[in-house]
Image (cartoon, rainbow, N blue to C red; front, side, top):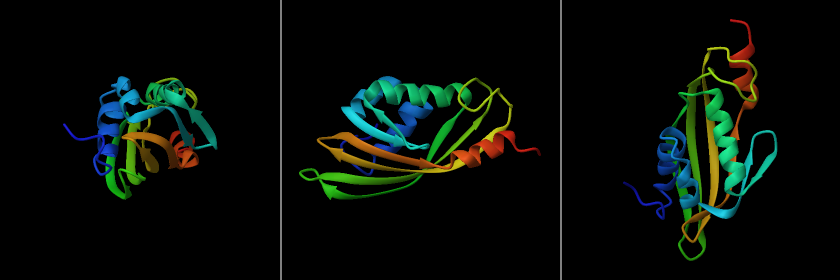
Length: 143
C-alpha cells in the first residue's frame, strides 16, 4: 500500500497511482490545495486543477504512458518538512491528441527529475524537469 507521509515512498505512490493507474483523485491526497508545480517550458501550475489538466494533456497524447521510478533521495524531518528528489522515466506511444502535434504512433522514452517540498504530509512545491525538446525529436525527427 505505502505511506504517503514517508518521503521515501511518496514518489513511487504518485507515479503508480496518479500517472500509471490514472487515479487522479489522489492528487488531493498528496498535493496541498495551493501547491505550486513548475513544469518544462517554465510553466507554473497552481493547485489541483492546473496539475490535473497537465497530467490529462500528457496522458491524452500517450494513452499507454507510464512512469517508472528509478531513484529517490530525501532530507529533512516531519517538523521542518522534507525535500525529496526523484529520478524517473516516462515511456509511451504517441497515439492521441495534445500539445505535441498529430499522433505519430512513435514510442518515446525520456528521463525526468522531480524535486518536491513536503510539509504536513502534503506536497507544497514540485519542480519537474525533463527535456521537452528530446521528446519532440523522438516524435518528429525523420528516422
